[in-house]
Image 1 (tube, helix red, strand yellow):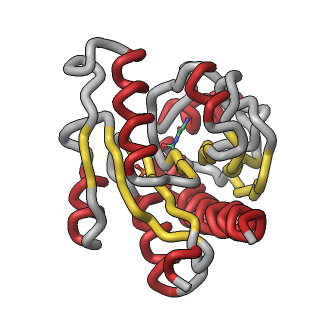
Image 2 (cartoon, rainbow, N blue to C red):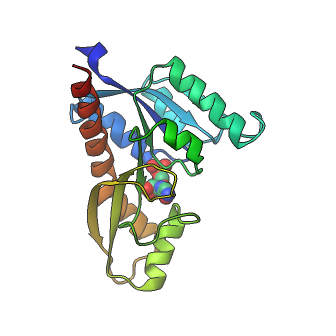
Length: 205
Ligand code: GAR
């Protein structure tokens, strides 16, 4: 029954290809225990908000500046999540760090996708293309993606899924980013959203 599904809020900052993968997974039934109820961006111009609109999903921008800083931003975020009765928060290219007070409040209720095999190339300062630049600079031959729960340590929460992706001669950060997305991120994040949604639904009955 529809009303038994876990209600998911997806938090974004940019292009939103991972959001799109979750939307597509819900359409195809890969994600069937949860439903994307809301998309929230901390960046006004994020294309992800357009993707939400195109899919008929309510989207909103919360401005840290307008809310008077991090505390205000999180207060606003929490009030929207409460209001919308959100069960699960998915960080899909959300490139801001949430405070320990916020992550504690949503213990094991926040997922994040990170574009490397944690514990490599992760933590504060490692986001987006920077992660792939660092992997190429180090000369590793294998990278990948990780979905994990979010706790007070940036990229330090319990790992849910990981998938390895090969690095090839001639890779640029952009080429590698695309391969990691295609081969790992766009599969892992919807799969993890389904797994945790199913657990939330099961725990209710
Ligand atoms: C993705 O590669 C995601 O893994 C990464 O940002 C990109 C967002 O792309 N996230 C991080 O680096 C988090 N530390 P998208 O907006 O197209 O989903």
